Image (cartoon, rainbow, N blue to C red; front, top):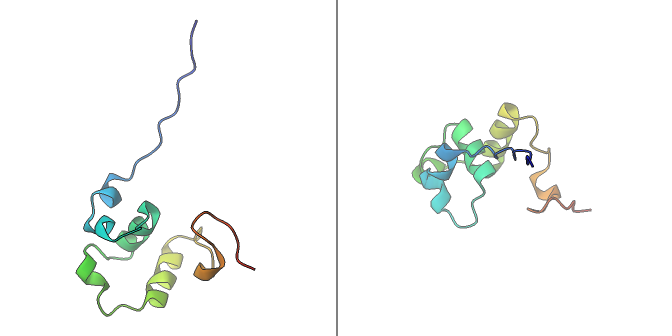
Length: 79
C-alpha cells in the first residue's frame, strides 16, 4: 500500500532567522516584505514612515492588498 507523498511547505528561513522576528506579533510574511524593501535590522525602521514602507512593499509584491487597514490578520475584511 503506497501513500501519496505530502508536499512540504516552503519555509522562508531568512525571514524566520532575521532580527525582525523579535518584534512581538511579527508575521513571517511581513518580515519578508520588510527584507525585500531593504530593512534588515530593527534599527533600520527608525525614522521610516509605515505608510511609505507599505507602499514600497506593495511595489515589490503586487499580492499585498491596497489598504492595510482593510484586512484583519486572519483575512477578514473590515467594512
